[in-house]
Image (cartoon, rainbow, N blue to C red; front, side, top):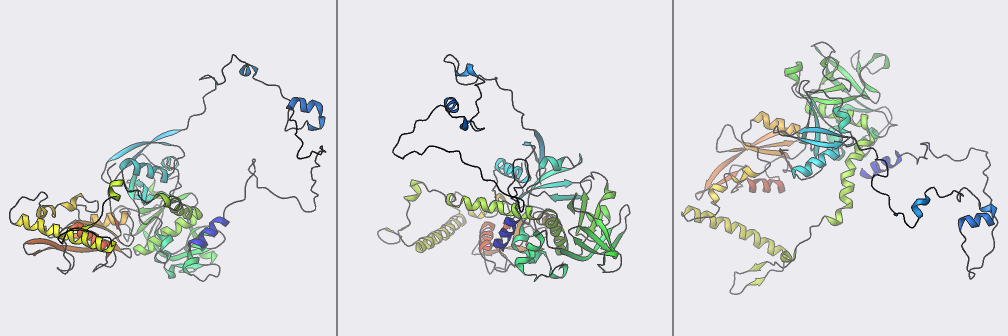
Length: 529
């Protein structure tokens, strides 16, 4: 699928432009092309030395060589060529060039901290995210996003990577702000398009086989006519009432049918235009707008700042339907720009693949695995045996440390106490948050398979809860403590698989699905700016 999209991306590129901005064109049909006649020159043998004359003298001797490429223009700066003049210009002799326009932008994190960043006027959202990642010492996994947050309107959206930050800020009200947040689902539809576009919601005006490879091509190709159709709850402009209407999304805009599910042109009425608008998600639609469901989104004109009366508010029946509508609006509005934004990090990673392998130091290269089980030590040359020995040594160290702590001897790390608090240093542990708060964090950072966090249990003070996303649904799994030989373990499956601490548990389920519906892939993180 990537190869077909790459060919579509190459086909969408325009022809090379001339200096005046016009495309280069060939000669008109029937027009004669005059070939420039070469000036007659002397026949010179290869072994004959050729004397190169000065330009001015050459023009005086041969008037045919006085072309525009050899102009007879006197030196306008003779004082710079004198023996007493310095060869370089003195400082301040040239007028200063125009300084690049800069602007201060305030960015907030999810914990309430903020940072003021001075940026250029042409800085994109991707560039600002990379700058914040660098200054906050985060891992740059290309999943960070800049969020446009409107608390007074109850709206928010993730900026596209190519959008200019200063330009977006000029359309925001004084109460609005930027948030720095993870968004793992930003380009997930390029990897699993069928999970985002249910078959019953997608139709094509032209004949298409509807395969996985052609699904995104039809959205990105401007000559195709994809449609998203289905029932939505639509809020009437200037009123509090909602109506359930049959809605159709096309390249020309969002339409509703005035007669059932009919899509005849005389029955379609324009609801919103995507050209000068942005697509937002509703934060608290039920409370602020009396929305019938929790899956609301909004088409907001760019000129609107504080007026909620001009917002086109819509509600879907479930999360999958809302994701389909919002993703289709993004694809129809930005088209090939989204695919280029998705491919840029991958192309950079491919270019730097030869430098990605870390260089080991001399001391690390001199380390070898040893076996001291016999009378004399031996070097373990088999890598599989060396890895097995390292795992056994790690388990043996934990058992020795636990036994020493039980007997009352001094252990430097106190494993029994350490296993109950060591997880609090991890980014995936969010402490004492409610069930609703954990679900909100998962939704904000992208409903992708394997997105998870751990928190304290509200019903059992000794237990923990794993919150996991699978198929755009959020599920909770309780982690219970269990006793074995005087030692406390943690388990997800009623003691069948035991772990001495939560870090071991997370590491295990990142490699194995076990009793979970999918492996743990991405963890929710909050960064303080």
